[in-house]
Length: 107
Image (tube, rainbow, N blue to C red; front, top):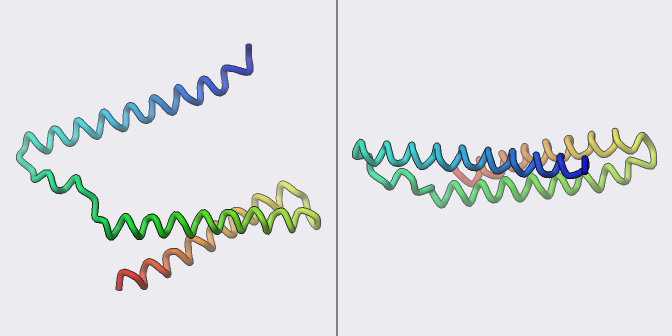
């Protein structure tokens, strides 16, 4: 019986966060529409969303490289330390690479 509380509380918290996000978002949009602001500000720029997808793709590839490197390093040092350090290091390096690539593409 006690094992159900953690997943249940996780999903309830996730639902509460999403509910507050969506209701606040709709209230803000309705307030802007009432003030006469153009509705095109709600549409995202497709060029920015492509760069965001590129950034997330590079980041996830970096995380997977960190997992593989951590697995290889776990035979030498402590397994937990190897995984955490390599995931964080490769994820950070991937974000730096993604920044360089997106800055070159925007120029």
